[in-house]
Length: 504
Image 1 (cartoon, rainbow, N blue to C red):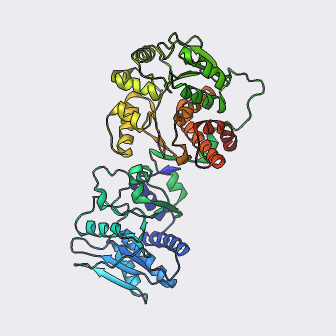
Image 2: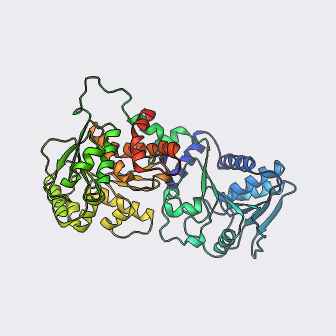
Image 3: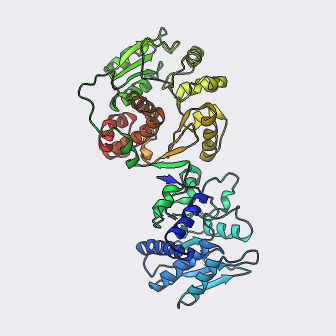
């Protein structure tokens, strides 16, 4: 599913109006009808509903909702802000006139001073002050109103977007001046900003309302942002059984450089992730002391011992592998760092770098230039900041990742609640599978094995990254169904095969 910018949504709306022979007021009525239905499905006519409408089209939506609610037996209290420094949009003015024709609506048009109504925990507030068309941060009396609503105990519903929140980038915005909604009723598409952790407190629960936008207009409008859903991964997967004559080399020979003394579990989990997601042959290069652990925990894998007992000091490729993945539990000793340095400077085939491989690079930043083109990096937030400098928000990290991916021609998998895969061309694929129980040690190691396995099976590296993230999340969902709250990384690995079969 495409995730459009505010400008893209505006163009889709304009094309829908033109192609479907509608007016902007028709679109507003359609939007208001969808919002009204949602409100009616949640609260009875006896519920106290206090509505705050701004001077633009978002305010017009709100006034239209107030009219429709009143026609259904509700008694909304409506405040329209038409202060001296602003003026009503044409559609907002028309909706005000229509609302005034409806009896039993408590309507107040605020043109100067404002005495706010008392709000209690049993009330519902409808935030229709400003939508996605907002061009600058809120200021003046609107900031006081936002803070008044936020400090109340009322249940807050925002129409389109929470007032004060921009659809894409919110760097520099004062969080005190953004509505904290319990429910956001957004039109047709989720906004990019909804996927950043720092904005969760403003968006609350998000419900997407179908606006019946013109399908051709949606298809014709470009974007750099996509939400990956089940159908997308289903389309990417080979919709066929394996060739009955295939052998283990045909479906991926994987080399994992992983593990160190006390961290062999990471190597085990990465290997299980690779094998459970279909890899034919997995070789693990690890310190000699890892022999018993690996041969006991995952006897299906080949053990290639390092000359050192407790950490990796060399990365020697004695065979041809479909892909090499470095990092899980590998450690960052000086000799390991030297091994990573030598490998990256001599190996020119795309590889997968995770965990301690990234931490080694962070210690020698010049190694970023040595990463083979088309390689995949899979950092979580802390690892990303070690590599590319301190960041305070997911938004900042995504912007930096886009720049870095383009500069070094690599794919970056920014791990998180909504894992974001950033391609070399700057396109971003946001994951929709997974759950909070996956926030557990070793989960990322399983993901490394999963992505490596898919590359080994012949999927292009960037496809494998997007698919691997979704499959890993879906396996986590299946594991949560099995085990409830206490999901372990091994549970995720054990459900990978089921997840792939289910998605096929």
